Length: 204
Image (cartoon, rainbow, N blue to C red; front, side, top):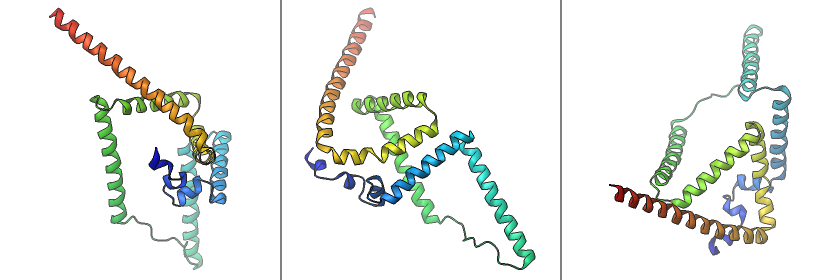
């Protein structure tokens, strides 16, 4: 525990602008994100629009305005809409592809370790996360879950930094109990497998 306890939560989050926003060190941006997301959530809830339908209508309105502006500018000899040149560089594409490839390979490697039974702790963590996601998603819709997740991301790290010592004690206790539980489950599963193998050998 010694190495990571010497690092602040801000440093663990990377120490950049994203960490500043999450830790409320750029309060105006953080509040703006929360209020903007909340406003979007209210709009979706009241209008009953889906994300795809709303984005499509906004894009349709934007394209129509620019199209009419450009046509009117040509008739009235006025300058066209001041649009920058839109393109993606090859370097940006390669960087994005390399990032995605690295993350996918990490996920595939972890999935293989789980499927082959090489990492029991990782299996229990993934199973717990998937089970928790399935439970939470059954209570609410995607947009509400997304807004709630954002609110959690912007509050939990700050609360942890403020009450770090108290939370660490509970986390350490929970970790020890979880480790003992995982060890017991491993031993029980291994015992049952050995018993099944021996019974099959006797029958054959």
